[in-house]
Amino acid sequence: MSSEQAAQDNEQVWDVVVVGAGPAGASAAHAAACAGRRVLLLEKAELPRYKTCGGGIIGPSRDSLPPGFTLPLRDRVHAVTFSLNGRLTRTRRSKSMLFGLINRPEFDEGLVKAAKDAGAEIRTGVAVSRVEQHGATVPDRRTVAVVLSGGEVILARAVVGADGSAGRIGAHVGVKLDQVDLGLEAEIPVPPTVAEDWKGRVLIDWGPLPGSYGWVFPKGDTLTVGVISARGEGAATKRYLEDFIARLGLAGFEPAVSSGHLTRCRTDDSPLSRGRVLVAGDAAGLLEPWTREGISFALRSGRLAGEWAARVAEAHDAVDARRQALNYAFAIKAGLGVEMSVGRRMHAVFARRPGLLHAVLTGFRPAWNAFADITRGTTTLGELVRSHPLARRALDVMDRRQAKEG
Ligand SMILES: Cc1cc2nc3c(=O)[nH]c(=O)nc-3n(C[C@H](O)[C@H](O)[C@H](O)COP(=O)(O)OP(=O)(O)OC[C@H]3O[C@@H](n4cnc5c(N)ncnc54)[C@H](O)[C@@H]3O)c2cc1C
Image (cartoon, rainbow, N blue to C red):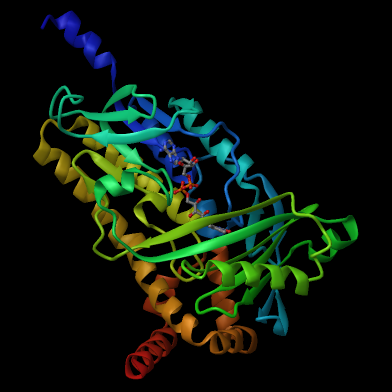
């Protein structure tokens, strides 16, 4: 092959191809582009696209945004009303902002723009059907073939799968799951008097199904009302949402959008890469198992995946590629992995004793302060349990009690 031909072929191989332009994919593309790599971000929808999501932006999400990114906040939360399946309602307030609320279409579009500004190329309206690391589509061992649904093949030195909870790349990597939930949501436009009542305040309702909860997140003239529960209880989850909406006096307002989406949490030993392909965000099952908060997990894992994919792209052989991919896995396990394991324990306690959690949060000020600190981002669930002997002991006691009860 002439050197001219080699250079031409090289031109056609992207350093990093990112699949999916949600927060994980946009962050990965941004990070890899900032590292100086040629990056292509592929998205099956046209942007802006709708995503079923409460749009709650907690401190760690704010801290993981690209430099200079302006959050398109629809509201700032200063109060939380807690209820236990509609009963024992209690509101807690905070002078400083707890967390922010955004609409996903504009938030995600902003993140994609940041990736583009950093140098990534974006293609929308293209669905990836599979990736191949061996076989006829792959010219050499340093290349991954990304096959689009129409048959077009795109070549890359490294791939980041950020195609969400129903994506394809997680299956290629062999992601293993231990908790799958169904979230149902309605975007409900409301008149100004109703909107005023909710301004700056969210509602969290611990639900009737094990591990379920509901929320009202105000976004100006629209309320995002949703519930989440274990998958497999579809009819009961739907009923919970209907009852929840009726109880709040919102049944008379026609939702502008009603939708559902799965959330998935990885097992502790689930792979985060295979060969030159890394996974991030929902595609990797990276999500806080108790609250199902996933935007900060997507932003943080996306950024790490982009940074390590930039190194995988430079790897000259399979051993080096594997070393870089393992570094990504270590970084995830040391940070988000620890948070997930505490979240898993919290979820197990909450699923059995929602009343206890409700009583502690509404009646015991240090618990409310901890909740507020976590949402503000001054601490994480993992840090809290590590640094507060009382929190650690309480969780240990609950774990033991649960083990005894079988
Ligand atoms: C009901 C509900 C409420 C939630 N509320 C919150 C909340 O308030 N706060 C919070 O932090 N988290 C929340 N989450 C979780 C959060 O929405 C997700 O964790 C987050 O969207 C994950 O981001 P992601 O980039 O990994 O995936 P996604 O946001 O799902 O993005 C994946 C992208 O990949 C694209 N894609 C999929 N397949 C392909 C393909 N084959 N080819 C090309 N592109 C593809 C999709 O179109 C999509 O744009 C909620 C989840 C649910 C279900």
